Length: 474
Image (cartoon, rainbow, N blue to C red; front, side):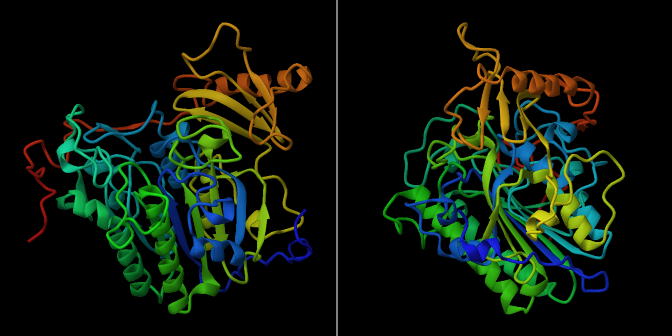
């Protein structure tokens, strides 16, 4: 049972129409597990800044991302199920001809139309060709990597953790570039990997300071704590639990610095900060009490630790188990900024009533669909979840689907399909109905066009030569 103070906490009113437009900061960590931070149960990693953020804000205990990173980021940017806007089977790789279509309207473009300064500091991973980069999708500033920090040649240290031997290079991927506004700053080597959290944090602080007099949207998607593990030099070996914990604790430090920057410039009362993860954690993480890991459609692959912070607006020390997700970020920020959402089908909704603790908040999503790539692997309605076997992994003795009561069994340990055939039938009907929209497998009629370009090339070739047009400006 929640403490009495939480139960009595009054929901904050939405900002008045004539009030200054609020600022928004979205911190998105890569591969952070559900219980990798203190507010969600970690007994290993020391996260004092996130602990404080949760005490001053609101935990979203049933916030969904996607099983892997590119789809998750597409949902955040567009307000849609990933499959609707980025219909791919997995993630994007260096030099791919595909990416988020330039005609998609991102949350940055929506806010830019309201006079917001916009920045993405960190990992993009929605396409590395010129047409797909952040500066073409509504961001004034981009500084960071175009994709994951493991996408490069083994000789550059991107296929092995800090201090580990370099494996043989089997993938043949091009060198990993650090970008600033469409130009290559440098080829990323081990020292650069170790500096990522620190340089991203400094860039974020500078952006807040430079834009304190006008509304801003800062998207801070860390490459940490994705493999390979490269905690900063001040953090490596600092925790008693190894490199992964070192890096989680450095990320916590970064969160503290960003919140301090907001406070320092007197912006706390008009800044909403959302902390989240792009998907469930890998086996290095702790996802308890959830089942599964990254790349799965069990709860541990898609339910991510999320905190909303806005002093005076988001009730302190509270939590909600409402079904919410990445695709709700765009419509929520648009509503708070007084902007109209894009004139196209969205799957997300304005979840401000749930963030503000409104007692009359209606369920944001009666139904939620669990897609892994192009395939539907689960349907949730209320507390019931029907989970279908992953493609190619069905055993002859497996049932066609398993039913879980997430209210009683969040760890998805007990299949109760036999006891509730009527629920199974209802959820199978919901799954079947997707054929007229996103589809159960493959590209459904409701999926929009994937961005494609001709003559796709990596930003740095195998010989270390920077692609023409991406060279640092003199």
